[in-house]
Image (cartoon, rainbow, N blue to C red):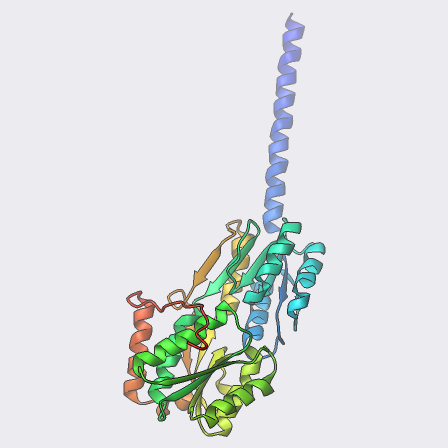
Length: 339
């Protein structure tokens, strides 16, 4: 009887020892998983040195490489027809995170995400979500509104123009915000708009801007990615004013650009990857704007003396109201063409 009891006790102690060891191994594996290097891939529609939208995303990729220790890769000039295959290639090669920089990556992310549930897909400026798909959206309409106010305040003809690249909700909201801001300053202002249909064709944007200038516009704005450089050049060639987008574009047309809407995409991408790394990722649409420091209006210092004090004070006061929440810029994603 004593021998049997001793054997039973020994079995309990041995089992407990193995159970404890098993828990320790699990904890070690969890720790290793947290410390594991994330493989992060980025897909962009244009060049990563476009001094605008795509370059800002590339800088975000480099930021997570340097500060979060991620292994990174990227593909530039991704056409709409190739987005699904680009996502599939990265997911099938065991990338932990695949980022599509632009609203048009939304549907491909949902499609590929369903096939690769272990990969997280991040879409910038989209509106899609699933268990492993999230959209990180910047309130770009906020700077659009401020730049519209500035454009209307600077216009001598009461006629301004705005150029977009490929029509989509994330760009339409900027174009509409620009109009709303302009009409706060001058309700009767004439507002010309055009879509180039290209993220990269600078000649098309320059041609569209020139047509607006020929039609009396004396300030030109854009949200046309790399192609927007053509619009800035058209304004400078005509001795007129312009507003930049995505990046501080003062250096692209020093004598024309009054201000730029700067989107801190690197910080946005770092936020998204950090969410994944820390295990707090959610399949949702996450919005961040001026109050969070993700969207910012930056003046061209070389041109600030061209802006009348009363115009700048008006814009600055509205900026403060946006940041403290006392004014909310309408987010209108419906195309107003032909209204």
